[in-house]
Image 1 (cartoon, rainbow, N blue to C red):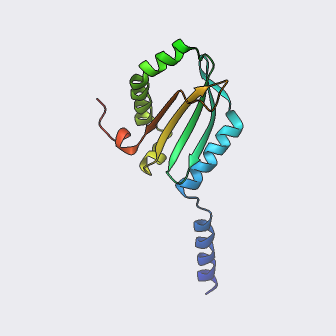
Image 2: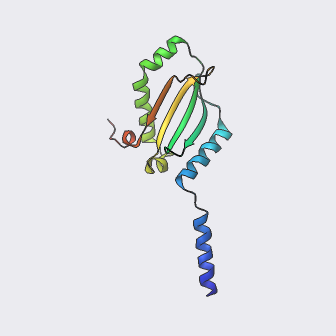
Image 3: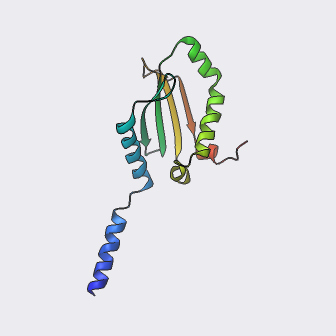
Length: 136
């Protein structure tokens, strides 16, 4: 009887300590942001934060861009589809995002000028339909 009680208590403790994939995403996004952001990811582009939107199961990556001249904005708009293809390819090949992909999460990338965070330059959302397609 004592042994059964210990086994039941042990099982309860083990299962109560398990976090859901949503809780993990929220925790990891917050930890990454606090420890690393802002971080330079390429010339003039900084990752400012990662946020998990639980209601849509979306990991949102926020980037600020230093050079926001009219020419830069035009180039970004012109290259939007190529940028999207590269982002989708990166997600498809990412082993660090496997658990989130398996759980059907979406990934959102938002780029804005460093001087005006309210002015979105580019927003790309990648859904399970996008990253589960065969690579072309």
